[in-house]
Image (tube, rainbow, N blue to C red):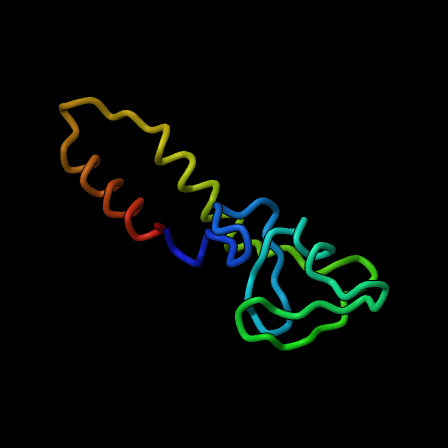
Length: 98
């Protein structure tokens, strides 16, 4: 799977991806799991930089969310056997995302 849609902590497709100040991403639920006890800080699991957690949490990663929506729609798409060019294009896009 690709790091654009995969969490570095749980190794699964993102659930509510957030972006850290170092530009690495993780699932929203890990924001509190990986925070220092009562310190309101988190260590990035990729580059190990320490960041203060904002009061409202880290911002959502809209690019990753949109890629997840596109991938979901491509996975559900059935063009039938007569649309080989469109099927190949969709498969290429799906592979690019993954």
